[in-house]
Length: 64
Picture 1 (tube, rainbow, N blue to C red):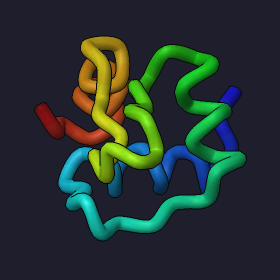
Picture 2: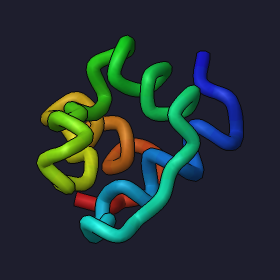
Picture 3: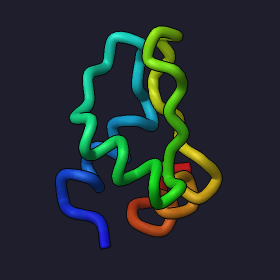
Picture 4: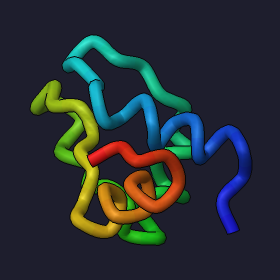
């Protein structure tokens, strides 16, 4: 089960920019559950939602 903070992070990742700053523990938890992918830190790419992450958000609040 995701914590409220992890849910909030997942929602923020949908519109993340390279300058977005997320808690590493939340990112790891979401990546471990395959809701996001994390690029290499030096690549300056924000985390991205996986199909599973998009599906979860769609079920929770209609975000696609």
